[in-house]
Image (cartoon, rainbow, N blue to C red):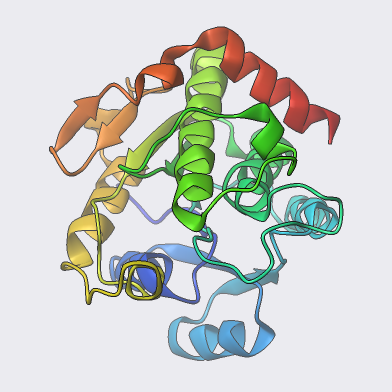
Length: 256
């Protein structure tokens, strides 16, 4: 298979860090993303490799990060869009948008779109969730108050929807784009804080992310959603199959 260059966002904690560690142990070149400089330095001291810093709640920082990557790399084989947020003390960004949507949906789309020239025939693996709820555009714009779970569930269906839209639109001209529920309630900081449970073995999610990133059996599944709770490709929540709504989400993000 050979060594791949793999960018993992949110790689300083949780499943992102665990996946980066495993990929490194398999001999791949890992590019780390995080928002905390100290945490990035700690991970680099352990894994080596390269890193980029950006706060995904600030889309200007996401765009700058993408430009810096494009200056340095001519090819990235895999992008794992893992960075995400569930609980936050500040549910709205300075622009007034829902922060969960900005971090979980908008930022990974913008990063992916800008990196398409160097992703070519690679893979984009987008972390979705079993928690999926119909997208409310007013809520996405920050005009409707939501609790943490509802905002998270909406933002995760939205990333699943743009994954389907992008995968279908690019076809064989771009990378394979797959959304995945890596498995429910894995042992991560997000799960401990959000659900007050130690969580399940994180390696179930790690192994699936690596398989989706590298194994040839997934190459024909661009635009699809993998549900690791059931170990198979599945349909997202019903609203996630609405192509017009997916197009509207993408058009909105493009305008940002």
